[in-house]
Length: 93
Image (cartoon, rainbow, N blue to C red; front, top):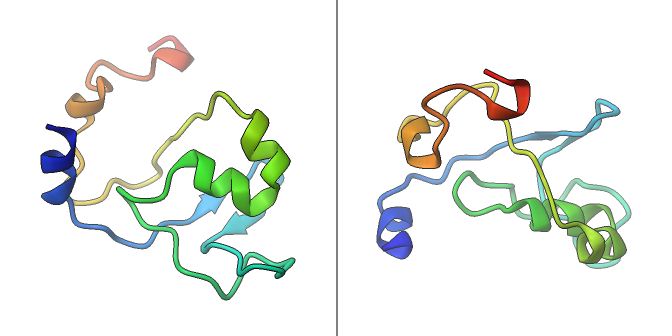
């Protein structure tokens, strides 16, 4: 069911803003110490684990929780699908 749902989604480039303000836009190339130059992060494809790997494999291996928030929604995103229709539970809404 999930594979069918994802097949209908339109991947668009996304950015990831870290707590220190650093903006990541793409996967690092092997051996590259910068975040530039790789394949773009894409909505519906890039996972929090993928982003963590770009920072550090050790971080990715030890990370168990990530919070995803959206400053803008992609056109085919429905907050109800993700259980977000009633507000942000992390903020007590």
